[in-house]
Length: 190
Image (tube, helix red, strand yellow):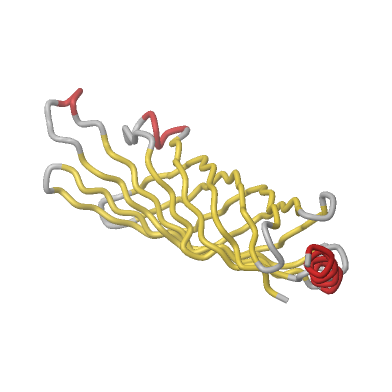
């Protein structure tokens, strides 16, 4: 009985395809979340505290195994510290769509290193003491990340991005700059 079980287990393991035998997957689509640290005038003049960044869609597709395109649908929020002015705290919120080139490199058999430069559109809103202003504008992001392949179709993504957006509206002219490390899960595309 023990020999039959060992033989069955051995045959099963040998018949399963290993990740090293499978061709490289060309893309990914995922979701990620992490803290968002304000920098520059966004921190100093807009009084933004550390917030949160959520990327609802992180997308990347490689055309030739190394170069491709990346896209990101993101949002973020930061509490405004109103205590120095004797007013209640407010909120900065922003979101947008970005796209641009992606460069990827294999790190061993189970990981990829990605670098991306994205440009796009951003919308921002500030709500403070019942006073609301909003603006839209050009945005760009520079980022790097590592995708560790957990299984044939799933990867754990660890990213570090820097976002800059220049939002303008009727009563707003604000440069938003953040650095956000994120962690997420990606589905690997063929």
